[in-house]
Image 1 (spheres, rainbow, N blue to C red):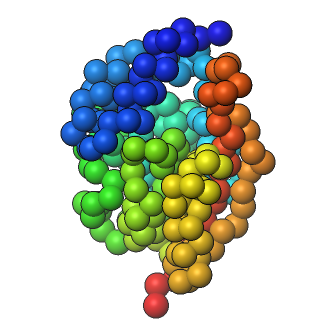
Image 2: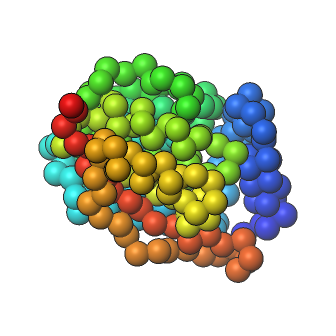
Amino acid sequence: MPDAPRYKSWLNRVYGAGDAAVLEAAYDEWAQNYDADVGQTGYLNPAMMAGMVARHLAADAGEILDVGAGTGIIGEVLAALDYGPLVAIDLSEGMLDVARAKGAYAECRRMVLGETLDFAEGRFAAVTASGVFTQGHAPASSYGELARVTRPGGLVFLATSEHAEANLGFGAEAARLAAAGVWTKTATSRAFIVMPALDPADRMAVHVHVYRVNPRS
């Protein structure tokens, strides 16, 4: 069992941050211990995300944007599977410093989800987002920007909890974009417990959803 008081303290800080500056400071402070801390929980998002990418995207598809990349755990896995070039963005420079040191990304840049991303329309073959669309983090309104920077026919991979989808607006926003013809859902993983080593009361059921971006009108 992981060090529950330590881990819960960090979760309480990041989920209860309240604004971007406080959230950024918390992740900056957590960055050097983040991988070890989440590793103790049996964290499954990287494996599930990589599995869905491998199932639905050719390795030579082109550039992939990892949003809310954190310390680059998912980038490490995708790079080992010969995906790329990979580009990382995150709110926290401290987290990005750890990601840069792993050497998986061609580019690491600080950007804030919920704002306009500093990328050209249709730049990326795919976007991955794991664990960032949750309580106190990036807003559901960010989804439109993910679609904008993905090329028509490209894929957006979203790992989100059932709670966030149902109660925090993420499911509704994804459905709104589908109804508007922005993207089409093409696949969803089975539900999995993202941190199975945590106490049952703290566990979250998560799906990885895959959206194909439609041609722009």
